[in-house]
Structures are given as structure tokens and as C-alpha cells.
Length: 92
Image (cartoon, rainbow, N blue to C red; front, top):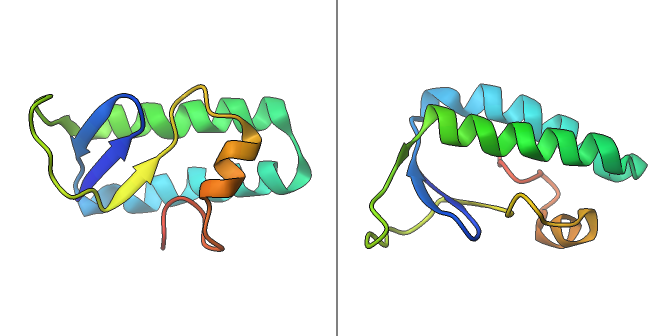
């Protein structure tokens, strides 16, 4: 699957990593619902770092359709709330 991190680019990620990413996504959703800004920042960073670590970056000139779009590392809690579906950032 192709994942886009806004402001950074695209990463090819094997579907076998979705369970790990879903766990972080669930934590992020809970922190957003409770308004836990420090937890939100920490978990968003962990989610993005996991995608970078587990995925393979696509060349900057590649433009593939993205199956997932994740916020930039500096996105605010409110901006991410606007991006979310009822299922979170990572549909499971």
C-alpha cells in the first residue's frame, strides 16, 4: 500500500504492518477524544516514525495514488480531528 505523509512524500508499506499501525491509531484516537495534547503529539510522532521505519520511501518525482494520507508531524490536534473518519486515520 502507498501511504502519504503530508509535507514529506510517499512510502510503500506492506499490509502486514497494519496491525502495528492500527494500535497506534487507536491510541491517537483516544488521546484526541480526551483532549490529551501531549499524548497526541507523542503518539502521532510514533505513528509517523513507524511508517517511515517500516516503509520504503518512493522517489520524490513518483506520484502514486495514496491509500492512506497521514498528517504532517506538526499538525495540530484540531487539524487531525478534521482529517479523521469515524475509524481513525488507519481504516481497519
